Length: 66
Image (cartoon, rainbow, N blue to C red; front, top):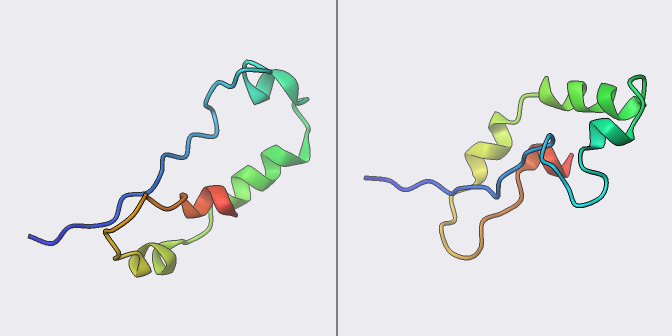
């Protein structure tokens, strides 16, 4: 059985300490929503395929880094 590397969780809708939610803080037409949509549409399979190292702390989720 081959193990695969897990990534640190990426949850852009996660509630934060202040503000409670980024959507409560940013206006509906803020450019960050556009950037988020573009990133969600990108193909990251080439990056995910290269993560094979199982040692150490999990890497950051590539979508979050973009």
